[in-house]
Length: 362
Image (cartoon, rainbow, N blue to C red):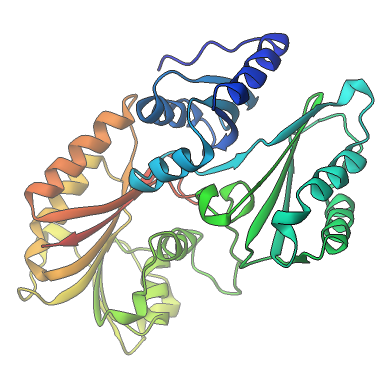
């Protein structure tokens, strides 16, 4: 994919100042590793010409957009991006080689925003590029900045904040911005949603469904009966059982032994093309198979008669080729022909070379 020509630092400094004068804004954007070019393409399609500088190869970049912060937020909400995992505003930046004392600069930045922060809950999120020559130690800096927030009558919190103070340290530069959590796409630092691995957890695939539940605003426990296509070893099945669903798991491979005797599980050790169900039997269908996208679409489509109208489908699409955008469009069109209406497509933090689709049968 063609990427934006990256200006040198002097050019970028000029551009970033011009952007503010012309009503533009600067952001640090993050995608899953190696998918930054596709995230840049999403910005290009939404905003036209963009300027960007790489901060973490293939993952994080500094971008200038020809729109106000309010316009950026509105467009991203109207057309949620697939590959842009997280954004944070750049309200101020400092060149560290000019002898800037990072914490002193950031405390001053907080003081300058006292009116906005006073009486509000604020979360501090600090990131830095690997090998950055800076004295900014994350844990110590976070503690000091939280103390600076208290000094302006703001309450430091980890979750459910009114404002997020985002700090990013890169080679020779320090960036800071303040935004509402909902305007960052994800309220987790860098969009990196973390779940604690549980004792006896079957697979890390469970994290994908946990994240999908959160990102798509789903309540899986409100479903009664679910179908898991390609279920083995059982990561997604285990979460559905935990949510109280009756689950039918289909896979010719073996499920984890800990699941087999669960009273709410029906395990069909068969290829999904060989099974049959009652029409409208399920109100949830999930599929997380390592198959080619079109094979997956065919298999899921053949079983959609068993998903009731209004039922939810959550499937992962493996991006096995060099044209992921084209693959995604083709998959969405094919599912649309099967009366599955796309609600959101997203490359989750726990996705790798894949995305997750959330659809509803109409």
